[in-house]
Image 1 (cartoon, one colour):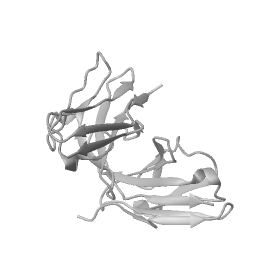
Image 2: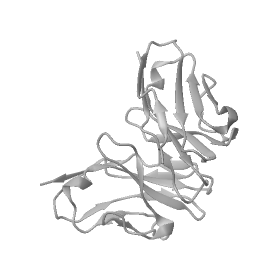
Image 3: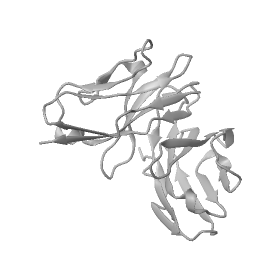
Length: 114
Length: 109
């Protein structure tokens, strides 16, 4: 079984530019989550998709972040325009059922905004 | 507010010594708690979930509702246990996890 795939693995962009992160969940997993860890802080929830619908986007920091999951398969997270404080590691995870069984995480995308 | 606290940023022990990674949570309902581990250059992976009451790689964790704790324990640490450990709370069974800040475990030979 293929795992959760994220790309790029690293991205370095200048402040003000746009970056799009992609996540391919495990096939058949309806639940897809985005998290991020900024330097020195804990891993924080961004949002949760069930299929193509946003179930919970309470963790999205501001309107510079846009997440999509067209067709309920892969998801993208776009940051536009990027700011210095957006630097961190962005994790994607997927699960068949939400709740008690835990997730499978991707390797993460390390975003550096300079 | 829901919160997970891991008081130790770094825990260093010698091989063969017992290890306990502390986790306390703040939540008024019935929590679902997990331990995740990230080994060097690997992805974050699920180690334990409290509902299953299992032992994985010699680690166990017991939910203590009175003390609101979910400490991770292993009687004899191994060098390969060196990693970053995160305690996490799913407080509404909806899949949204609240993570602690993580504890780096270093097991010395």
